[in-house]
Image 1 (spheres, rainbow, N blue to C red):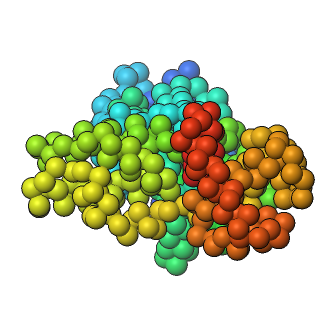
Image 2 (image 1 turned 180 degrees about the vertical axis):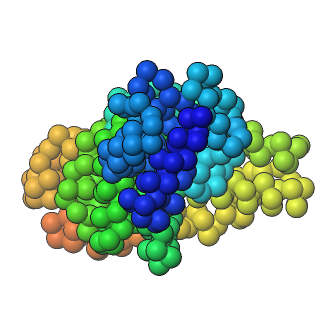
Length: 448
Ligand SMILES: Nc1ncnc2c1ncn2[C@@H]1O[C@H](COP(=O)(O)OP(=O)(O)OP(=O)(O)O)[C@@H](O)[C@H]1O
């Protein structure tokens, strides 16, 4: 009976709102039941429900009353009746069981899960924050903004969150995509005149994850749309997770209002890897590789050699291992440091960190707590002369500068003075363990 009344009300709504509005917003409503003056409707998404409530609620109430309903209130909740809409006022609605939802948006990499993410000092905060949002508890920081240099694990953490959300909360809608894909979809929606669908899609997600957001810098209309999407979701208390290669305030050509919104939640950076973290990552990747290349062993000295020499990013480290394992399996030899040097000569050359003379001078003067001007000036006091010789020695070791060039950069000294200094330190290094430790420490911090 109620269904027939609804048919009448719907027909009146078609006439009063027009065919387009009717098709888009009234036809998809499913009347679930009506009691105590309240009519309850199922709607496909929460965005849809909000939209109808804001724009058509009064009209719906009015036309329902005009058609014989005694209603004073309508409610809209997300759901779907299992078959054709059946309106039985006093019987409970039959709702389709919740199926685990697919993650919407870009495809996720199966290897990028929390279990495969090695945690160390440089990334522990980012990891902890990622774990927290993956629990899908009450939203405490919105957005979570992860940033860091190339290949430091931002995408890995984002995918891990998405996988974990899918298993913890199969009922919620998670959307992961890159900022580039966001723009592509936006442009496509504009071209095909489907902006309403676009808005509805993005406003109906429970967790939105956008990777590499620096991409929208300078793209004005994409930024504008992103801003509206962002605000709409935050207003609904939906979780947003963003990644970028730099902090929000440093993204070029990003509107100030967006940068400031992005800083409203928790901003965490992934620091460059340390030697220890690289060792950990290598050990974990080697174990993974050994399942594909049984019988191939990597000596500990090789692992240390790689962790020491490849300090750029983890992606390069992984590339080096892949090549090493493939090579070792082809030639059927154990992986030694020599084999590694042969096989990875190009990667090792490219990874050689370019340390500058100025960096060395600054580091050494800081380490020995003297002023830079005293290190470069004419004073011959031992407390200035020794750090000066150490800095010269490190310049010879870590840069490709010639002795005369180094002399010039140290207050215009002669190349024989530099040579004398370098020899002195070489000598001390072999005799004095404190000197040797100091040199190792300085070298490591310069190469980190
Ligand atoms: N802590 C880590 N533990 C294990 N693997 C890691 C870690 N950090 C990075 N990786 C691996 O390094 C590779 C590069 O990581 P990812 O793609 O997540 O970097 P990114 O920060 O998103 O880089 P980009 O700025 O280029 O997008 C991936 O294969 C990832 O699994």
